[in-house]
Image 1 (spheres, helix red, strand yellow):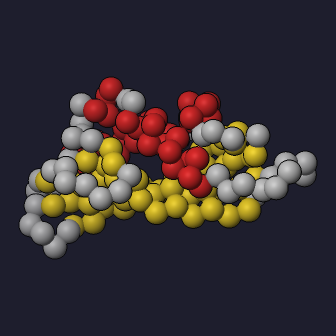
Image 2 (cartoon, helix red, strand yellow):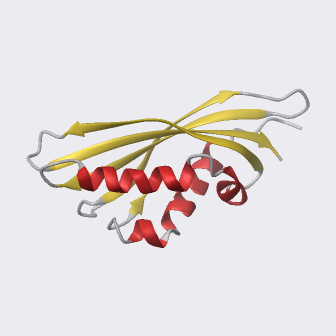
Length: 138
């Protein structure tokens, strides 16, 4: 079987998981995967990096997914509250993501880091979270 890169399937799975969460919906104006006209507060699915991580008998990949949270406010509390929900939805929650990643089995998800950034625009805050998703081809 030819190897198929799971990056698109993982990105769609993450989008579907985040978009379908009622608790996250209470915190943000939306989850987007591309350009948007939404006002902050929102989460944008950003960059992805896919690297080989095969098993002995199956093709596998490690996919890093970057999530960007944009908020307005003086501090980072709002962004950090949203980020905490992202972590709760994804970190060690491979069983929740797996059925949403078509054509690949998700067997591990970890939160690699988060970083808070002050945007040059006054009052705009930017939080970056990166998750690593390990998959095997179904």
